[in-house]
Length: 269
Image (cartoon, rainbow, N blue to C red; front, side, top):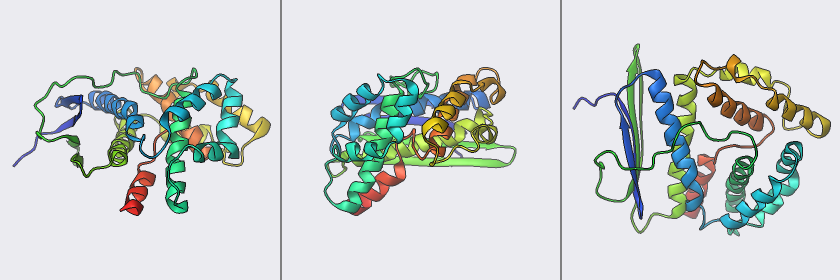
C-alpha cells in the first residue's frame, strides 16, 4: 500500500482526545506542525510523571527559583544542590533506578523554572487541542507517524503506544518525550535553523563554566541574535534552540530525556 507523505499526531487517553494530520508538505508547514506537536507533548508530560515523582512539589520549587534574577536562576539550576532537591522529590528507592528518575526530575524542574522566566522554552505555535481527524485506533493510544520523501531522501517514523491497564504512566511520558526528541531534531532541519552556527556562538561554555563565567554565558544568551541563525519567520524558533544548546553545554537539559525513562522502564520490568 502506498502511504502518502504526511505528518500525523493523535492521542486518546481518558479525557485527552486530540489529533491532526498535515498533508501539504512544504518545509515551512512541516516545521510549524512539528513545533505544534512538540508543544503539545511537552505540555502533557508532567501529568504522566506523577507516579514516579512529586510533580506538584517540583512545580512549587520551580516557581520559587524563577523569582530570582536570571543569572541566579542559572546558578541555582546548575548547582549540585539541585540534584539533592530533585532526588528528595522522586519516589524510587533503588539506587540505579533512582538516578534515572532524578535525571528526568531535573529536566522537568529546569523546563518548569525557565518557562516562568522571560526566556522562550516553547515554539511560538498553538498546541494541538482538538480532534480534527478520524482516530486510527479505537483503543486508547499515543500515535505519531511521518513520511516525507524529498530529493531522494526519505524520512519515515512511527512512534506508537497502545494504552491498556498494564501500561504505566511513566511509559506514556516516555513515548511523549521520544516524540518531542524526534520533532526537535526535524524542526531544525525543516525550519533551516543554523544549529551548527548556534553551537559555535556558545563555544567555550562547558559543564565547568560557573561563577562570573556563568553570568557571562547568560548575558551571551540574552544578546543572542536569532535573525542571524534562522530565516524570517523562524527567529523565535532559533531562540529555543539557543537556550537548548546553552543548557546542553552547561550539562543541563531543556527537554525530558526519553532515554532515561526508557532505561527506567526496563529496570522496572
